[in-house]
Length: 283
Image 1 (spheres, rainbow, N blue to C red):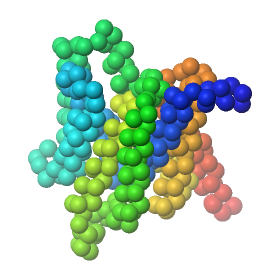
Image 2 (spheres, one colour):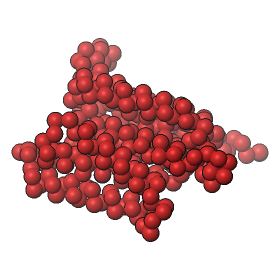
Image 3 (tube, one colour):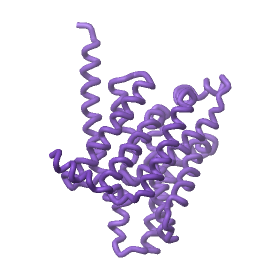
Image 4 (cartoon, rainbow, N blue to C red):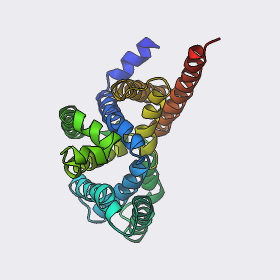
């Protein structure tokens, strides 16, 4: 097993996949706790569909660097969802559903009408489920992902206390002088960046699992925001590494394998939480 692992690690595409996988898993888990507590758990799903529509537009325009259109469009929609949703007649959940379904349908329609590939089904499957895209990353992709991941982590560390305030009691934070709109904007932009990065790892349909499962797993055992965040980050990284390695050895889809490992981890944490709760009950 170790000899085989060493053999695989001799290939640059495997090392690139592991590096990017760890970075994306770490970034996804940091704001996963905030999204769950703010009841924006499905924003990852909605924004991933928006990103799918943007990718379809980039494909039709034959853009070599899709990030130039995917990232701005996803950021714009994230801001729209988190800031404008509560101020309009269309509430956040309804707006999320509209953007999600509309972008997904619009993207698939464009890819069919202006098809630039002989294997349309394969391209759509790769975009939706991640497939082998994580194993075809170039050095430029790794550098870009690393830079964006560092920015996300720094933003979370610098604004940790403000994110904490906005997450738990936005009204009190606003009353105490915190610029909640600004920090909601920071959260929105950061989430959009994470979504765009995560599409290479698990595809657009499975991003929500990458964001939500580690946070929910950590909440089964820990109660404080800091403890849950740290546990969520560690769990997410371990699951991503395990999923990528299993997919390489077993020749299974990378994204689906990572999500399956996340589900298994949640089941283990759920059981641990149940045992912990029983142990606290006096006999």
